[in-house]
Image (cartoon, rainbow, N blue to C red; front, side, top):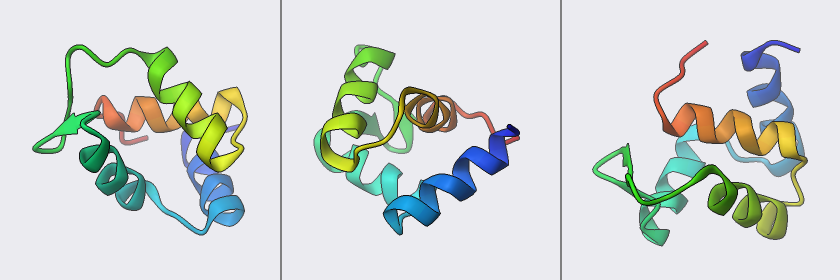
Length: 72
């Protein structure tokens, strides 16, 4: 599955796109000024997304990668 396909599936499941997740992550302190807080690890993001949005591990990691700057 391509990176974009992960993002498309996340939007279909949650109704939220990557920008929505970035806004929520900013509110939670995971991102600061659009950049991933250096103290935040993948496991923290994965646990949050699984708990709050019922996403699978691969989808959570796609969001984490987007937070780190991956675009495609």
